[in-house]
Length: 90
Image 1 (cartoon, rainbow, N blue to C red):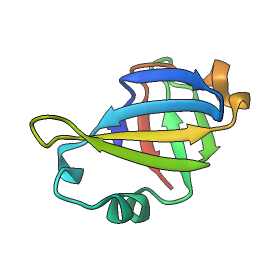
Image 2 (image 1 turned 135 degrees about the horizontal axis):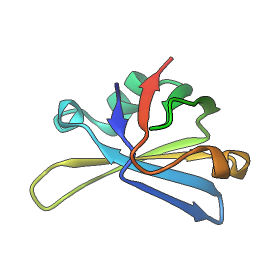
Image 3 (image 1 turned 90 degrees about the vertical axis):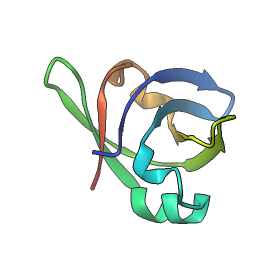
Image 4 (image 1 turned 90 degrees about the horizontal axis):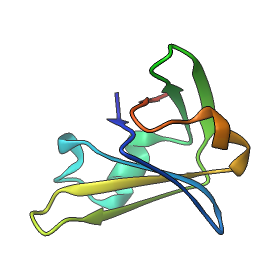
């Protein structure tokens, strides 16, 4: 599992989901992108699953050096992705 979705919001570029994973805290953005790949599987709390093609990956570091990971998808997935869902690499 890559992370649990903590935030879901629309941006001018598409649908953004965000979460954290302590295993990524020491990695560079390039290494995180390589680890995540180009597609993910998202498992919702109701058991439904959806695969999504990642348009972009961005990271930021918190004040305590924890990495926040943000994945960008097309807005087509808006109604299929929910906060609390789990994100897995493919």
